[in-house]
Length: 162
Image (cartoon, rainbow, N blue to C red):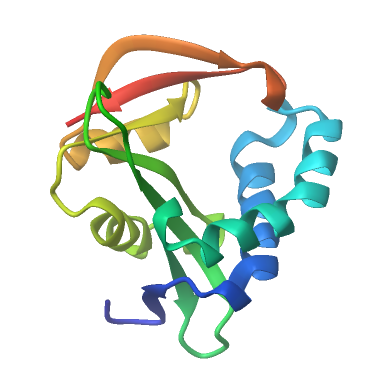
């Protein structure tokens, strides 16, 4: 990827920075739609969760977008292989970019690194129309399936597949 941003594979020593980035992206994306105790729990639990994910090669693949000049993390994507009977062989388990880096091509680059053009599925927040349009441009479509994530304050997610 040309320009001020670069995509690379996440490393175990990225765990703390990834945890902080994850919470920042959630705060930007969902703002007041998620109760503060959920963010507090995420801040407490995320560093250990990211450390486990990054140390286990079978837990999926994680990519980070970095600012070339500073090395600061600007976004991430994560894909996981699914089991037998799942809708698609890959789950895009997360893709977030800090708002100040929107429109720079980082989201597309992170998506490409995570799942390429493989058949995959994802869950996107019901009210996140920007993300839904992004995924539609990448060939994903809504299935009509909806789930509510009580552990995240009742956020409703919609399934998209390609």
